[in-house]
Length: 482
Image (tube, rainbow, N blue to C red; front, side, top):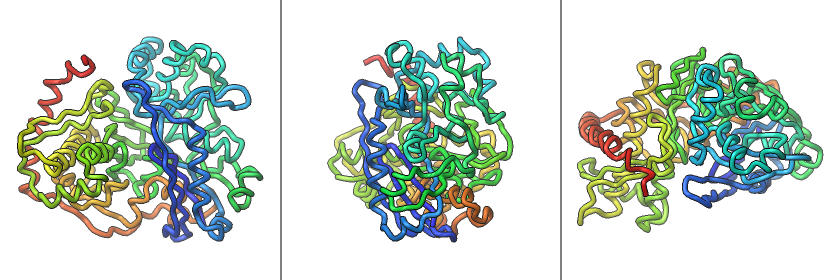
């Protein structure tokens, strides 16, 4: 058996799979996000470790004892600053934190070749500009920083004693030469750092270390190998077999992602598309990222008093109409693709006396779908994408799938265990690292059902999307003014 652990934003998930990639058991422990100031988003790394232990120990002792290897995945870009003896110096600054927008421009001025080296724009959510912000605003913390780790790699450090990352997660730091799959001395120097501040790099299917004796004892396991793993999206791709050029998935998690696998590095930074290493050797991928996806539904459910996202979606489905006039811009935490605008915010347009929870829920589902369509249009490989596998918690809703399929103009594939997410792919990477059959570990799970675009839905959303796009353009200069 193989264990996958995913350090997410809203929780840590632990999944056990067998050699046939069947999910045997899973558990989750919740996390909260601190937002002490506008645009800030932080977590205490100690909470990740607490939740990881809680999730793992919630699995049956008998199955834990049979685990042969562990894989890690996690939220990308988070800056975990460690000092002497790996002391955590401050709360981790997360992927959806927008405070370092000014530092993005400063970093580009320091290293004008940044886009060429990394193959990507420098986004406020990336790791490197966060360190410039710390240097400027918390210089004592910066001076004491001896190591910078990504969230899953901090957990790896506590599990194995080894400071190691892997290529897919490292691609989102703005410190990696993504084509060469190695740290860039030029980008590190532009941030006031050296290679000694960085973890060792491995591929996602390689061994990164072994469980420390005391962790193995606490978890009821042997001192098993820990695979490199992957950033949440790359690991999620492995889980659903999105590994060959042109394979694609759509992720409906806290954030929203369209991910297209490729065999070569194909940067297109000005489009706002990410060009990153895959979690497998000699593979890369294109990725569009919207910062708020399923989290928009959670927000709307809370706002309307519906209790949870499922209840709100059910209300919208019962209403069952795409004819409503309400429009929603889903930029609750700013946006990356295609706008690269950390100041962008959510907008509800077209409210009237008849607007109720179901209508608002419908507008949110449509707004997220249209934002995904904006991202798909930015992909250089978009024409090669014939269908998209859906992963993440939002994959449970066929009604939302109907709306997404219409907005994207592509069939959506729902595969077995796709809702398990990145932890599933991390477990598959662990299987390869332990010497398991590579072809079997990377095989896509069977398709359970497919949703194809309805002509009338596509036509209605095409009209709305014109208004949706103009609404952002007309309001972008006002974001951040109040």
